[in-house]
Image (tube, rainbow, N blue to C red; front, side):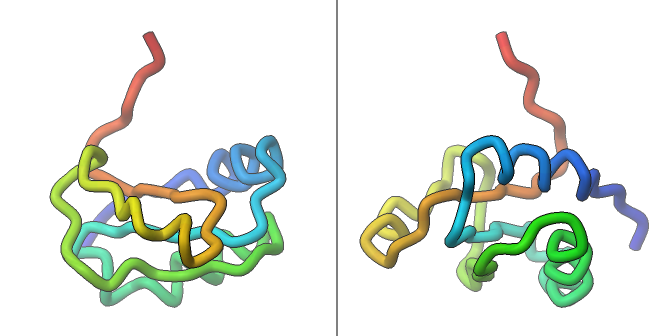
Length: 85
């Protein structure tokens, strides 16, 4: 499967908010590669990375209960780039 993830950009965003406990949401097709994704993020930024194992149906499908578990940042890897307005 071919995909492109900008790990430096992710690390820059994590540094900006001083993230400590990060929840990573991946589409089902990328979940088998979660170790590769975690290792690549960890090369650029050190934090506690957790994987969201349930299904994710887009950026509007946020695990709101994650804050109770101490997650301070969510990284959502999706199929399209979101642009700031």
